[in-house]
Amino acid sequence: MKRHSLHYLLAGLALAGCLDPDEPGNLVPATVDEDPSLPRIEVAGALFHCQSFGAPEAPTVMVLHGGPGADYRGLLPLKALADDGYRVVFWDQRGTGLSQRFDSAEYTLPGYLEDLRLVIEQTVPPAQPFVIIGHSWGAMYATWFINEHGDYGGRLRGAILSEPGAFTKAQLDDYLDRLMGSVDLTGEDFNDALWADQFMSAGDHARADYMSAFFALPATPSDHIDRANPAPFWRVGAVVKSKLLNLADEQGFDWTTNLATFTHKVLFLRGDLNEAATLEHQQMLAASYPNAEMVTLANVGHEMIWERPDEYLAHTRAYFQSIGFVEGVQ
Amino acid sequence: MQRLITMTLTMLALAGSAQAHTVTRTDETSNKAYLRTGVEPTTMLTVGVQRSFRLAPLDRDIMPYIEWGTSVVRPGWGNSELTVGATMVAVEYGRLKLVNRLFVTAGAVETINFDSKRFAVGDAIAAGFYDRIWFVAGTVEYEHNVINRIDHTDHYRTTFYEDAEDGWYRGAGGTVQFGIEGGVTLLERLDLHLEVKMPFTERFASYNGSPLHANFVTGYRF
Image (cartoon, rainbow over all chains, first blue to last red; front, side, top):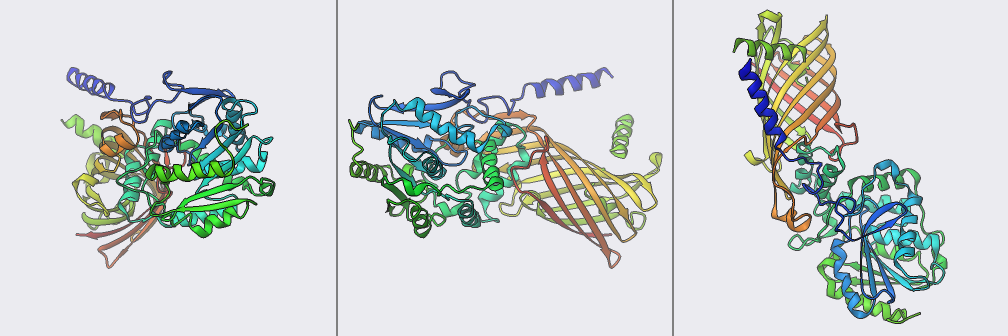
């Protein structure tokens, strides 16, 4: 009996010495509420991971990352705009990247939209003009904001939208069909992701985020991501990704109803390799704006900002010039 | 030793099975080799053998089994798992039976983000109607990862998190599956068995991976 007790004790000690997958910092990085050294802002009681580059008085470029559920790490090449005299603001949206996590029930569509407005209020000085650069979901988020708030009292001078997926529920269904239709169900990436789920279940925030990382990169071949130079992420927000997609599916959306009133020039900047956000698809979305221009980068896919930063920045600077959004503008 | 064996067998008797096809006609044939293929959760190919014998102290048939499965996409030891378990009828009223299966699993997976080895325990209960040459049952299965070894790849460190901890992890969660299964025996020796299961996390949240698991089993009795 004593020998059995000793065995149980040893087994217990062995397990006690193991790492906890849910402990912050073990599998995925600690978030702003877990690591006080991270740059942050507090908005509506939530902590967002946020960084800005450039002089506070400079015209602001508000960068919106993709997903939903991704983060801004792969968009950091845009901070080079600070050297041109702009102030560039990056933030991880609610529940994503290094921002604070929330349980599924705490996400709502109106709340998510209000987050963006409050971040603008907090990071862009009053009366200061700003432009939004939105990538993928971030371009949808920007359009949602514009449809709701127009040019925000004349402060929003324009937007660069890079491969938004959809502005309406019907468009989203169509886009997701193309995106998910490209997944190779017998491919290595997809099957690795599925089987690994058996090794680590998504029963906790950290584990769910960790396992969602499988679907951040190669799982959708239509995006044509450069495997030799993949765009980095900090953490995929599994819960917010799932919840926003569910909310959009359940409640539907149409973010085109007021776009006709937004007369500022909008640049659609896309990569020609993307087979889900095709030229025709982007043209169809651009048609919702009265003043849109389409520019296509050659030989690059969805992660054009990471993979072709110089080209992307060159088009961005030219666009800023074309709309008169230059240093010192008032 | 005898005490340990008795304890194990008693647990099996009290505990249930997706291998429920094994409980039909056990009095006529004692061995079976089988091949299982399907999505579970990845596309898998599994081979196994089982043997039935009468456990006199409990007056029941018990069917220990051993099986090895590997990923169809990336076959090999690095993407495989070995399962050892046993199936037993816990309760029966005529042809209505409650069948229990208890099992332990050792598995390995190599992915773009991490390599892992896991040791898990699981139990499955099947309740259904078992005729001589066919059956249909509803199933509940729970599998818990007791301990995992995780080693992150360079890709994960570069692309996501440089300081990710390699090592042994405890409590990596588990999977609960609800499903239905059914089978038929043809030509006296050929078993065909289909199972469909819906997986959830331990907290009954929707699963992060495949929404449905489905397997087709072909067995030969001898």
